Length: 121
Image 1 (tube, rainbow, N blue to C red):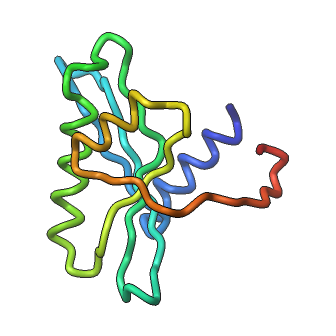
Image 2 (cartoon, rainbow, N blue to C red):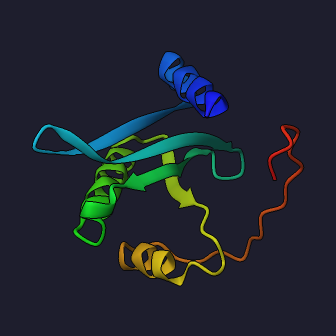
């Protein structure tokens, strides 16, 4: 948990790393979404990566994620440097895939490969 807390604090202290948005109901945070940035030279634009999505269990399947996504999408479309939005989704998470597709996202031909240095695979 300490590593996550340090990571959140680092992003909040340096907006160039990304942004958080939260959803509230009755003064209570019920959901959140984070975006990080990737520069694409061959698109000459910034890709916003959706990360760290969370919706409180009591509010799932009630449109909270869709509202957060639409807010991010609206902000991205208003920024002339942003050329698109991406996110990771687990192959077996078909429910999430259907949600993302309903919002206009589509699968790519890319697979993600990695070499992590923190010990977390």
